[in-house]
Length: 562
Image 1 (cartoon, one colour):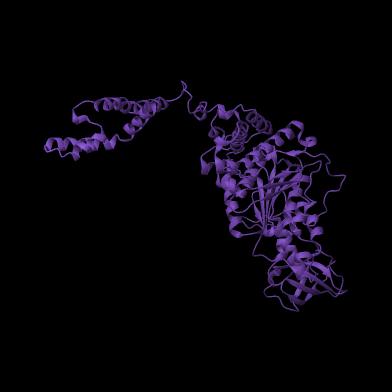
Image 2 (image 1 turned 30 degrees about the vertical axis):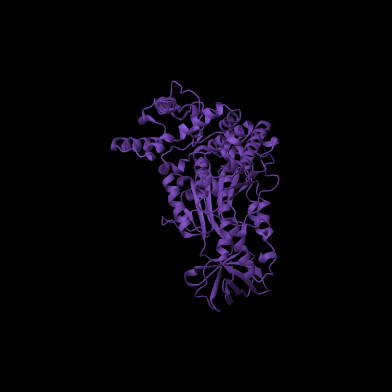
């Protein structure tokens, strides 16, 4: 049975009205029109018995009233299967990486229902990333959603790339990157970075670029989720879904709502924002066959966390990872702020009592150090109480231990990447809090993996610090030389003190050539007529100028003693 075709009745930007004489196509049906049927329209409303209204997923240049419209009879579909790995797609499932097109692939609708409650796993499991600061302080949930807050240049892309690498290389999973409203430049750079890092064969990239119509950007998230659900349900593999940026999904939905003529809600958002976001987020879940763990970049408009878009997004997140520009400027990578980041998984019932207590102790130590920074800046570290100084030392060593070299940055830093298990991360933090590494230099804990690497590098071990401490046998010859130098410089000081009594005794001698400075001036004023006595007086006056402070102090001391 052939489906009835329609005719365009009106075109207003991306909104197209189509008239059908027979049966109207259902909601979400894809219509095609234009030259070679390249213009794609998705039905969103049935206006009356013969007209439907749709939103164009492609530019509408060239459309006119009276043009024929083809009814495809089905919703938007994307290819699924193992062949999609290492490829880049658009919202329609077309490859955009200049590679060979895929043929004979299975196509699935992007509109799918989330897993039922009977299919979901009610047990919360921790998702280990191999990154110390995340696993210890901000544990992620397997099958959960984490928000990544960070601006440009703080290491957000590097952190996402490292998670993809760890997910693929050590957990045999699949990573899917979904760019919603992404710039073309960012997508191309990310593709190149993934290819150089060697993680591209186990990942899929889907982009709805910034220059595309809002309908395309609104559906690209559903297309990526359909591919992720295939690997979870059919391949029984864990999937890491990275979305950048979830706010742009809400923004695209707002544009579509405005174009469809719906009354805007608070602050101009669409009245159906909560429903649309839930339809996307609820599909991200863990089942008995596998799990989809999502890490989403979240843009907060004007840093207003009461914005409706931010409020609705927070209600779906199980963890919030905040990247700090200040820590990035200090070279503490990954630049995650441990005090502003939080996770619902950090409870004794999920991570365990020991892990929870240790994480709380770490946060307490770092918070105390943050409060003491102002006092240290004004008065200095020496003015703190001994206990506060110990807190500062532990906090600084913790900050450096929570740094970590990444596999994806080896070619830039020259430092081999490290994957640290949760057990090693907790052990290292616990030993630092017990002051086991208080005699180690802070640099010994910087950019290492497990804590034992600090002991395996004797160059980084520092002797017990102290201004008066003796150099140990393992120290170089430099400290011995520096301690000998002050002794040789200190020898001239007793000499003037020993010479001053001689000058003092010389005052009683009749020889005027060694007379004290106070007697030099009268000798000159009495009018010595010989040139030799005048020159002697001049030399004595210059010598008295050099040694004037010490004789005066001695005269005063002698007068006080008498």
